[in-house]
Image 1 (cartoon, protein in one colour):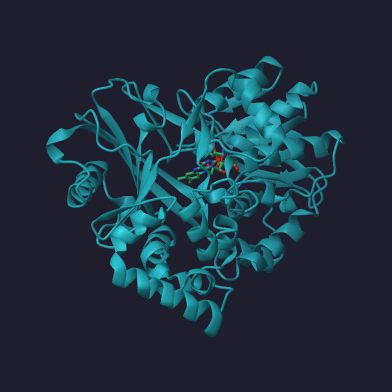
Image 2: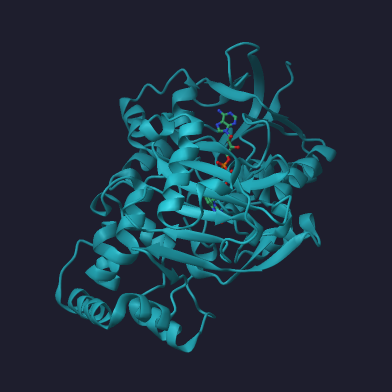
Length: 471
Ligand SMILES: Cc1cc2nc3c(=O)[nH]c(=O)nc-3n(C[C@H](O)[C@H](O)[C@H](O)COP(=O)(O)OP(=O)(O)OC[C@H]3O[C@@H](n4cnc5c(N)ncnc54)[C@H](O)[C@@H]3O)c2cc1C
């Protein structure tokens, strides 16, 4: 292929939204996705007719353009779902969003009193280092509530102490929530101004989020985009000022590599991977050090099908109890009945957080299913004798880790990448921002508009306050 192409690396929400926007403007972008399916973290996996997300994916946005895009692409195939979720902690289930009487009943009079006392002490009399996750949450809610509702889950998620995580994550995730507001809303039942993390109702495609992305792919292809799956970007050639070509190959071997000359490159590849793929590598040691300093937390999901009609009414349960490694449980028939082939069965996603290559990541799938079933039995969710089948999904780049120095590393890379005149990076991993799919979609649209000359958006600083966030 000698013709220069507009290339897009990655077929997740940002890559597809970019392809879709370009194709609607008469361009013919060429998208390369390493998986066999598009959708990235938002794809839906079909296992013997049962449908599974990579963790449940709510569709919720405050961005009118994204809401219109979902409506336009999905038509009547979008469900309006009432959120039902709980927190499991020390053998008790707390409604989440929290309800006053439920919390009071579960904690008891004495513990509730201690929580309020600890809140007053921390809020008004103690100094905390609010640049860390621990300091920020303790200041907002007090030590005891931090231990009960934040510490164990956050430490499972990040794999490190909350003292070593930047408070940026909490500020994004639970922005606007304070104990005073929470108690006021718990008592009044007011959800109107609930912080974005607690949204009560969301949209969900009838057959899972992947359906939306498959339609986006089809729509883009019909207008001239080429969407190639099962091909991995392995190298990005440049001359220091411009990207010259992209080398794509088989994700499982080095055979069949193809050098695609590019006019322009949009990338949603994880930021550190992008740097490592540059050919030649950046001559500045600082850029390489910065790339090495950015880490992702991985997700490993044990998906199982059970011979049980009804297990629990929630879409998901957060598992805070430290005695199990399990982080969250998804119950897909409660997202949409169409996710479960047989209504007399239940399909669950048991979510674990780990690091790529650690002992858990490397465990074989049969042992992982056994491990997960043991934990589900331990907390009383189900029993091994109901297990029909299961499979495991791993994703190495699930969560950009907000270490205390991550901003410094991102700034170095950002500065370096600004030297390329025909390149934009976008998306959750591409910008190293803990954002949801509505945000990634919008970044893809804005990147395309920048290229077309229809906008001048700074993708690194799109207004995330208009979006919603959740782990
Ligand atoms: C467990 C979990 C639950 C979530 N829940 C929600 C939710 O409820 N609602 C919501 O809106 N958002 C949710 N999110 C966030 C959402 O998944 C992301 O915001 C969104 O997927 C980001 O889109 P993206 O295009 O930036 O990246 P991704 O979805 O990561 O897509 C990047 C794509 O690039 C591909 N790629 C990577 N390397 C290469 C390569 N070398 N060559 C070619 N292709 C490559 C990947 O395979 C992938 O398809 C959740 C995320 C997680 C982890």
